[in-house]
Length: 337
Image (tube, rainbow, N blue to C red; front, side, top):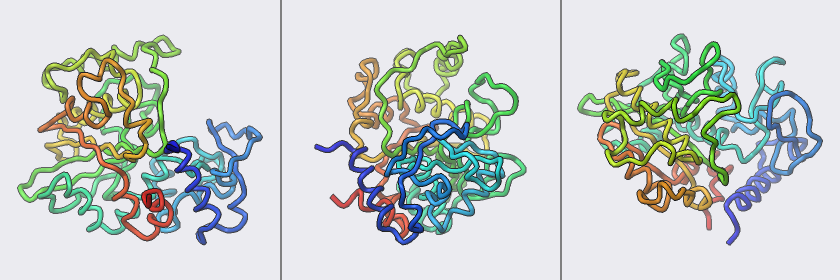
């Protein structure tokens, strides 16, 4: 069986070569930036766009809005492209067509522009949801919208050590997006969205950072708090130091912090993990210490964070990537088989 990343890469290269939304020059191979230092590494890849066309990774219908939001809120682009943003000093979207951040933005902004479609997707998990609540995007002075990207919470609920101002998407726990719905009974449910595409993780995360900080001690007290979102018979915190579990641990604690603070009026929280079911390398990535809770990521986390106040839900990305013609052209072919 061909692995998921190989399939996805071939599909995105095919889209790049045939879509009418790219100019001919954008079909050339492009560089990939692991950092935003601006240095070209020399190699070019068919699944990357040329540097000057990095913004074309965003669908045409959402491109200007996404660039404006990330610039206004100073949100970090994953593997961002130097000087591909709104002005010469701002990094822009990655050149990689396999970016989960780009896929998340393309999907959620497309659906935000059709709120009934977005609400329909969320009603699968909150059937009584009556409307989506506008929220301020990342900063208190930013415009309101239905989706806020790289959400870190209004407060440092996880008590993470930071230097200077906390910045969305950079060195603090964040969710790919936040959406809030108000239900018919007046309750508000916040969705912390974690989005994956072709990611896979093969090595555990060290307990100690390069700066000598013990990651376990940052989160231990909140994790071990009996009032937290985890079941009583949870494993020791050391069990989570392998992705994607380390991310989901922190996002569950972030959800709990938001709930306790009644941030944006929420009284329930859902950690919504959107991952292609076909990405078995990721879905089956369960370290030995977590296998008593399940053999796949979704079952492990459904057992660890069952609710009712904070609960974990997994869903395949297919319904989020075939909801509009533009999304279906870019990603829908991945699900044709």
